[in-house]
Image (tube, rainbow, N blue to C red; front, side):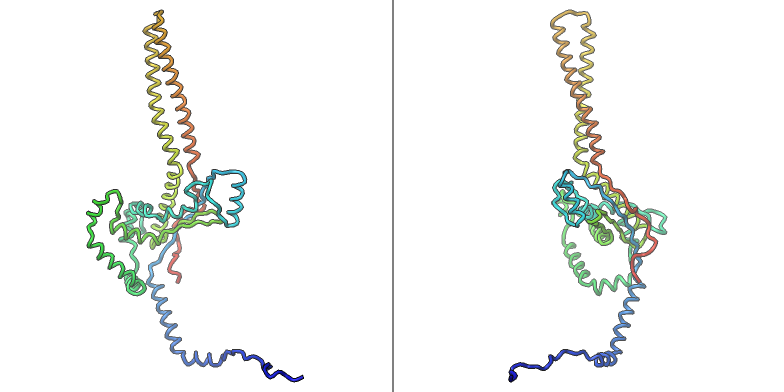
Length: 341
């Protein structure tokens, strides 16, 4: 049988790597490899030795999960949560625990933080967080200038343009035109911008544990700021969850005081009328006494009902108050977190 001339029986040619050529190329380029390696070693040493040490302090929080639903829907959500699947939030509070980290990323939190006083290492007096950011948190000036005019040059140029644009604006005129809108000063804006990258919070969706951390050059300041963040989160969640029941309690308290005064007044009128007409036998007197007795009974019933509702409202406030349990409290860090030399 004749072979088909169109069929090639030669084995396919495979690409081969010539290790000898690679070794020869690296040997010929050894000076360039050494120069590049030495340059990056020098840069690494420069950054590692001149970078300001940073210390990270944090806490781990276990939030209380309050559910409004029940039965099979709760079981389904629990099974979905164990599998890492989050179902619809129907039946849960509007402020879910997975939204807590956003509270610590909001401008009101940082604005509230600026006026808090903290202790700084080797400082006899307390300073505000804004003063600490402005005067005590400065890093190495050489490294800062190198970053500002190398990798940070675009941001530096944008900052110059914005500063020129702001200088042409009239802050007083803008504030007068919109008094209902809060306006940050440049000092507050710069301080908040410096704090945003140093305070972090996230949530483990598997274990439902919230982590809050603060990283600063001073370990004592880092621990205090992290503790302030935890306290702010706790106060915010408590105020949000109980604001409705607290308003209800305040309304019932006001009505309770009014009905109490009316009850005492009706009681006094009835007692004075009975004392003044003790031995009088008259249909008109009996009719007036019945009218006063009816007013007294009505005032007493309203007063008694509001007293019960006030106690129930107080109990509800206690029941609705959430609890944030600290699994790992804030501690002063003993080892730096950066730079990792």
